[in-house]
Image 1 (cartoon, rainbow, N blue to C red):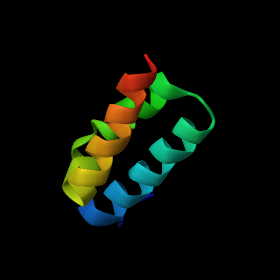
Image 2: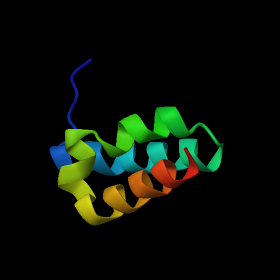
Image 3: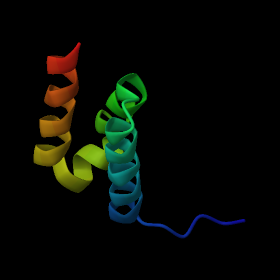
Length: 58
Protein backbone atom coordinates (compact mmCIF):
# COMPACT_ATOMS: atom_id res chain seq x y z
CA UNK A 1 0.00 0.00 0.00
CA UNK A 2 1.41 3.36 -1.00
CA UNK A 3 1.64 6.17 1.55
CA UNK A 4 0.01 9.22 -0.07
CA UNK A 5 0.32 11.56 2.90
CA UNK A 6 2.42 14.69 2.58
CA UNK A 7 4.81 15.87 5.29
CA UNK A 8 2.29 18.29 6.81
CA UNK A 9 -0.37 15.58 7.07
CA UNK A 10 2.10 13.17 8.67
CA UNK A 11 3.19 15.86 11.11
CA UNK A 12 -0.39 16.67 12.07
CA UNK A 13 -1.26 13.01 12.66
CA UNK A 14 1.88 12.38 14.69
CA UNK A 15 1.38 15.58 16.71
CA UNK A 16 -2.15 14.63 17.68
CA UNK A 17 -1.09 11.07 18.50
CA UNK A 18 1.65 12.46 20.74
CA UNK A 19 -0.91 14.71 22.42
CA UNK A 20 -3.19 11.72 22.97
CA UNK A 21 -0.33 9.78 24.56
CA UNK A 22 0.38 12.79 26.79
CA UNK A 23 -3.25 12.92 27.93
CA UNK A 24 -3.10 9.19 28.68
CA UNK A 25 -0.07 9.77 30.89
CA UNK A 26 2.28 7.92 28.55
CA UNK A 27 4.83 10.72 28.68
CA UNK A 28 7.94 8.91 27.46
CA UNK A 29 6.12 7.70 24.34
CA UNK A 30 4.63 11.15 23.75
CA UNK A 31 8.04 12.79 24.09
CA UNK A 32 9.32 10.85 21.09
CA UNK A 33 6.49 12.17 18.94
CA UNK A 34 7.15 15.77 19.95
CA UNK A 35 10.76 15.32 18.80
CA UNK A 36 9.75 13.84 15.44
CA UNK A 37 10.94 15.80 12.40
CA UNK A 38 7.50 15.75 10.74
CA UNK A 39 5.90 17.10 13.92
CA UNK A 40 8.51 19.84 14.30
CA UNK A 41 7.94 20.89 10.70
CA UNK A 42 4.17 20.83 11.23
CA UNK A 43 4.11 23.00 14.39
CA UNK A 44 7.42 23.65 16.13
CA UNK A 45 5.96 25.97 18.76
CA UNK A 46 3.25 23.59 19.99
CA UNK A 47 5.56 20.56 19.83
CA UNK A 48 8.09 22.41 22.00
CA UNK A 49 5.34 23.48 24.40
CA UNK A 50 4.17 19.91 25.01
CA UNK A 51 7.71 18.58 25.13
CA UNK A 52 8.52 21.11 27.88
CA UNK A 53 5.37 20.07 29.77
CA UNK A 54 6.64 16.49 29.77
CA UNK A 55 10.08 17.60 30.99
CA UNK A 56 8.41 19.49 33.85
CA UNK A 57 6.68 16.27 34.94
CA UNK A 58 9.90 14.25 35.04
